[in-house]
Image (cartoon, rainbow, N blue to C red; front, top):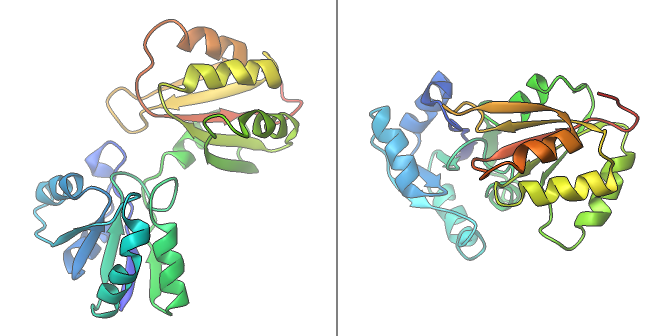
Length: 225
């Protein structure tokens, strides 16, 4: 019995690895964040496999049953809608439970928005702190004050309807001149990276409707543009 964590493309379908396709073909069934999304991916690569819904809304209540299913199988794959499961997506609870039950867990290397955003930012990425999504309200100001004093590059995800408000808070707390890179829709047709200061980023993204998913890469304390 074995659980494979299988990253799936975040945009371009060619980003999937040959090994990921081989695993998806070989497992007994696939745990999916959204079975419709995963079936479309499988159809594209001509893979016929049973898909089982496992997502943020049912992961607690279905965990024991899923563990029992894994124990009764030779191998199972876990996928999210895009990227690597467990990174701001469901997966951690299942991995922890499998480890506790001595079920072998193996995570394949593959697509994630974080690494490309860091590397292409032009901001030092030899040491960095990754947060995930910022809190909606509670704790956000305290967190940004921590970011302001960090000597490592900071990276986090942000949604389109919250990006401008987060930038406003960052200008207020961290200061207008801190360098930042903001990557949008990595590996997709409308991929774009903005590079500049926080105040320049705020001006840019305040001009019109903000669309897409974003990775924000904030330069360390004392960095200058």
